[in-house]
Each structure stands twice: as C-alpha cells, then as structure tokens.
Amino acid sequence: SQQGEEDPQALSIQEGENATMNCSYKTSINNLQWYRQNSGRGLVHLILIRSNEREKHSGRLRVTLDTSKKSSSLLITASRAADTASYFCATEASGTYKYIFGTGTRLKVLA
Amino acid sequence: DTAVSQTPKYLVTQMGNDKSIKCEQNLGHDTMYWYKQDSKKFLKIMFSYNNKELIINETVPNRFSPKSPDKAHLNLHINSLELGDSAVYFCASSQGRPGGIQYFGAGTRLSVL
Image 1 (cartoon, rainbow over the protein chains, first blue to last red):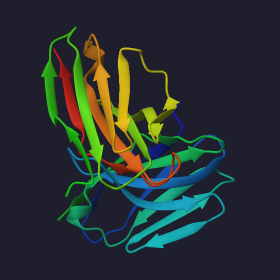
Image 2: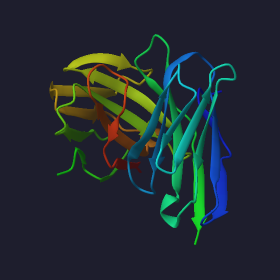
Image 3: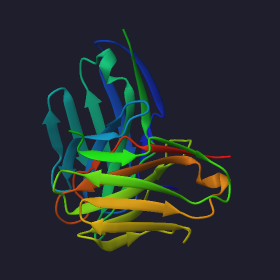
Image 4: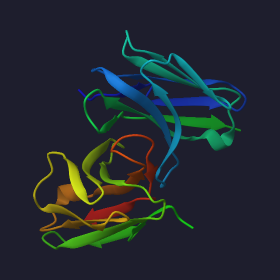
C-alpha cells in the first residue's frame, strides 16, 4: 500500500468543534508536511515537522509526530466552515528528495 | 501575481493526440515538479527538476516528456494521449534542493475522450 495514508477518509463536524486526522507512513523520514486542498484548487502548505520534533503549532493547527509509531496527527481547533477541504500528509523519506503524499482526509465543517 | 501558474486550466482532447501543459513560477525557486492527481485524489510525483536538471523521474511512460528551458519554467508534453491519462496535473516549486515546502499551481484538468 501507499506511503502516507490518512484516516479517516472523510470527516464531518459542526463549526466550533475540533477536527483530528491521522497519517501513517512506512519508512523512516526526514520530515513530514501537511497540506490543504480546497475543491478544484492546488495544495497549500500548512505546516512542516522534522523527524526530531514531536509537536508543532501554527495558529489553530497542532501537529504531532511519533516516529516510533510512524504516525502523525493534525488537529484543527475551533473549526470554521472555511476549513472545509481535503487534508494531505506528505513524507520525505530519508535519503530521497521526493515527497510521498497520502490519500487525504476530506473534512466538512457544517455551519 | 500568481506564484505558480499553469496553463491551460482545462484540456479536453481525443485519444492519440499530443498536448502540452505549461508551468511558470515567479518565486525564484530552484526546483520544480509535476504531479498527477487521479480521480481518487491520490497525488503522485512524476518529475522533478533542479536548476533545469532532471532529479526525479518516477515510473512514468516515456510518452510524458518534461522540458525545462530555464529554472522558472517546467513544461509537460504528452504524446499519444490515452484514456488513463485523464487526471488533474499539478505543477509545484520549492526553494533550494528538491523537497521542502512546495508551492502548487491551480492544476490542469486533462480529459481524454
């Protein structure tokens, strides 16, 4: 299967709630990124976490990385309707120059 | 000003035709990429160029040929289009060596009939 798989595949929440999505990967990595894709648009970088970091914050976003479990999570707090999008994790495998993208989580935030 | 722009946005063509997609970035980045996103939203890298030099060439049919006339441009030419080539193609760029934070274009939706 693919390097970088997100779960859940789809998530529907009410505005104001928190959204958590997870990413699992298979090989050792240099870093991991999260991207957002609005419908019909390109991907937008959200946050990058290096393999020696365990947690990073950016505004309402919190990313954790557990290299022993080869997993990462993205938490969006106090979600808004504008957060509705697909979210992808991307891993840069050690010794390579390429990012492998996951299959994405489709988040829908209901107003 | 659009940072990474690709044209056309939509491309509808018949099987067997040859088509090109153009990409330009005005960010001064050294590395550019082409990705293919299929109908299930799976995004897969195709090619990466660093300062006009091919760095990554994934298992892509040789009907696909990237061309980088300068480090601000990376075009994708596709020969003998097939139904399975229908997808959204994204161009991206990043600073420095391949990898790192990538800036994506809006995508080109290719439909092969």
